[in-house]
Image: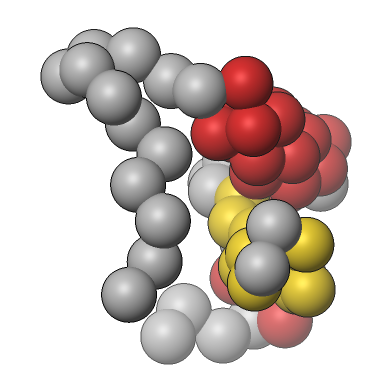
Length: 63
């Protein structure tokens, strides 16, 4: 189905590290907005197609 990106347990490929950095960037945005620092990205065919961070307090929506 999808291609295997991790060759050995505990290691990250360069592209996985790039994606993780993008998710962490989103988490930092949440932290700067006094939110719980959670960030996420959605990747399809090696392209980031969505990104978001926690906005529970701003939206007044804990769900």
